[in-house]
Structure formats: structure tokens, C-alpha cells
Length: 596
Image 1 (cartoon, rainbow, N blue to C red):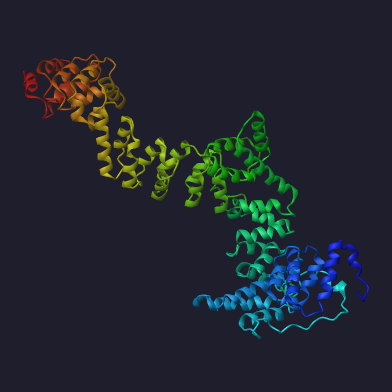
Image 2 (image 1 turned 180 degrees about the vertical axis):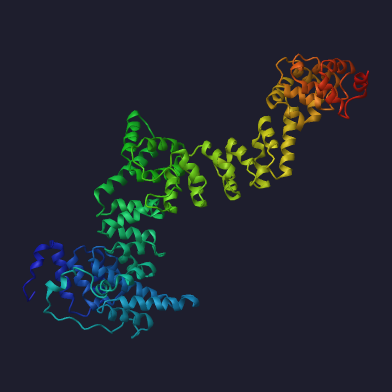
């Protein structure tokens, strides 16, 4: 070279020095196809920022789209330059697809193109214009345009040409000078991914949060942001968003981020190792000890993700996770009820109540979440591994129709027999769902409780319950029928009079028991369909003298044998006889006996 070599070459490797010399020789020339291919390959593969900066500051190379795209795609390109190059590439692509865009989108895309062009630095605007002209027309028959920027001279200041910019050049610098309100507005509404990424990397927490709520934020954009960010606040903000917290690609991007704080990385590392160990399973006692150790080290905030993983991949581990979560020593900053007023005099927000529903392990907390006015909280608490039937049974009577229907169709709780039985007693349950759940009532007690409940509105459901009770009773052997009658206190007689009263063998054995419930004797004595032998057995029962009501019912029953009635009449006092004489249902035989 005619001029002395620049001092920075001493810092480069031998290969990079050779690349610099080649670029310095090619730069003042009109490039051939082979030379353009060579520069494109260097733009793709070089990792030396000074050499990439030199290529980026050579306009007559950048007007060739492959070189511009290669520089924009090379992660080693200095960030300030790469952002501007990516903006130029996106604008060219946007204009390239403009003609094929739907008619109703063309106006929107045109406005977007204007906005992107306004953000380009001044030195890139002529390059983008030249590329767009190549798209629009071809100057000569070969298709190669001759509208090149002026070629540089030989006497260049290589030091300044190869020094990467320390900060974004215009218009990025101008955007820093804009008002904070404008930055917030653009971060929340921009459709330009480069600008959105820049907002995510902004030092202002408000701008970052506004960008996080931009509908254009995707996993790819967010992963790129956390990889490039040097702001510790961004990692906490992404981690604190529920929609990103549970996404494994985002968690991986957080873990691999170069600027991630060490405590944060340790927190994610423990959960990664724990899930990997749980996936492999316990092959030895050492594996069990490792699992227990990782559970002890697990951060409280990571239990939500571990529980989410277990629900999808290993539901049998949910109880184990809950046990370790309950054992973890911590102070809770929320009150027992998710709806209790906070210390600063405000009600708990929906996000706080959702978190409580997901993490609660106390019965009163779960019951409060089940009764929360917002159905989202109810849906979340149903997935809490600490929820037990006890809390659900306490909350079901007060649930509205939407919640009982959701609970009845839940993949786990909707199949629980005790929950199904409790749901059937909720008057808000629809008839179709009640008919579906009715087979869950498999005992006489459960069916009698259902038929006894006067709040239930569906007659068809009650009729089918009665049919199930009838079939269940008729299928029982005699000893079981006696047990069922005793357990119900004779209530089976009211619901199944034909079946019970015609079963004389069963009734005889029942009445023959000296410890029989007097309420059963009273029901049989009152019923006009009770067989005469059974009424006679009741009249001879030893407990009769202690229960005047049973004696009165026997005397008023016309089927009671005459001898038994006369004997019982003689056992009554004068006042009891006078009271019976006032009844029009007293048989004539006894009335004549009293007059005599």
C-alpha cells in the first residue's frame, strides 16, 4: 500500500489483516460480479467489527441487496449499524411485496413504509432509493443498474471509517430526544419490529413495559430482546408477565442471556435441573435425594411453573409438589381471604386474587377463591393441587349456575362421586347435567337425601331418582332391605309404599326386632296399606306402651284386627279415649265399646 498501514491492524488477526487489505483495494473500484460475491461472503462471515463497519460505510457496495442483507443478518455487525441496516432491509421487503398486497391493506402498508423511511439515517436513504429503483425498472438489458454512488478516493481515514459507532446514529439519536410520552405511545403501538425491539431495550422502565404490552410482541422478538438487553429490569418484567412466564422458549432465552443477574440465573437453573431430574425419574436413592435437595432450593416463584409442568407431563407428582411447597418456610404478605381489604385500604386486585387461587394452601383461602366474584379466580383455583373435596363441598351450595356447570364438566372434579352428589343438590344445576350426574347416586341414603331435598326444580330428575331407588331396593336381599329401612328411619316406606308394604316377610322380621326404631312402627301403623298381620305384630310389640302415638294410629287404622284394637283401647286413659272419640275416623266398634 502506498500509505502507511493504520495502527489498529496490530490488533487484528493475520486473516483479518488480509481481509482488510482486500477491502481497501476493492473499495475505490467499480465492483465486478466476482468482487461483489467476495464482499457478500465477507459480510456474512466476518466477526471483526472494524471490517464490518468498513463494509457498512461503503455505499456502492450496500446498494446491492445481498450485501445489505448479509450485513443486517450478521450478529457481529455493531449493534447501532445493524439496527439501521435491518430497518433498510425491512423497508425494501415491504415495498417489494406492496404490489401483491390485498387492496384493503395497501394503504396501511404505504403508511407503514413512510414511517419506516422517516426513521432511516440520512446515509442509508439514497441506498434504499437505489435498491427500490432496481426493483421498479432496469436501466440496461443486462439488468444491472449503473446508478452508483460516487466512488471513494484512495486517501481515506481508515481509523475513522472502521471505528464502530458508540451509540445509534440519527434518527435513533433524535428519538432519544423525543418526549417520554411520545416514546411510550410509540412503544405501545408501533408495528415496526426494529423499533419495538429498541423500545424493549430502552433504559426507561415505562417504555419497556409499554413495549411489552404491544400486540406485536412475539416470542422471537422477546427472545432477541432479552439476549441483547443490558437492563436487569427487563428480565424481571418479562419474568413477571404470566403470558411469558410459562413459555419455555422465553425461559430458555432468559437463562442464556449474557447480562442475566447471577441470582436470577440460579433460580432458573434450579427449576431446569429439577424438571430434568423428574423427567428421568428416580433410578436410585441418590436420585431421590437430589430431587429433595432441588425442591428445597427451589424459589417460591418457580413453584407455579413446576406445577404447570406437572399438570401437563406428570399429574401424579402434583401432590409431591404441594407437600414441598407447604414445607417451605416463608412469610405470606397476603391475608387468608383473597377478598379481604389490603393494609393500604384497597381491595385485592384480580391479579393478586388469581395468584392466591393458584398458590393457596389453606382451606379458607380456597373457599374464598371459589366464591370470588370473578369467574377467572374460580377457574384457577380448580387447578390448585392443594384443593380438596372438603373445600369444594363447602362452597358448592352457594355457587351459581355457570360455576356448577363448569365444575360438573371439570375433567377431574366432575368425576368425583362426592362432588357429583353435592352438585345434584344445587338448585342451579341444569336438568341435562343433573341427569348425567344422577348415576353417581348409588346408595339408598344418597337417593333418599336427593328426594328429600325440596329445593330441586327438575321433576324428571326426581322421577328418575325414584326409579333408581326402586330398582336398588328390589335388587336387595331381605337382610339388606331391613338394614336400609332401619337406616332411613322408615322413610323408604313413604317413597316406595307399594314395594315395601307388599314385602311382608321383610316387615315381619323388621317389626320382630325388639330394638326397632319407633318411627318405623309409627309409619307402619299409620299406613292403610300395611298388612293386617304386621299391624297385629305392632300391637303386640313391647315398646307400644311407651308410645301413645303408635297406639292411637293403630286404633284409627281400620285394618287393625278387632281383638288387638279392643286390647289397646283398654290401655288408654280417659282423656286419650275422649280425644280419639272426637276423630271421625275411629272405627264404629270402638265407638260403641266406649258408649257401653
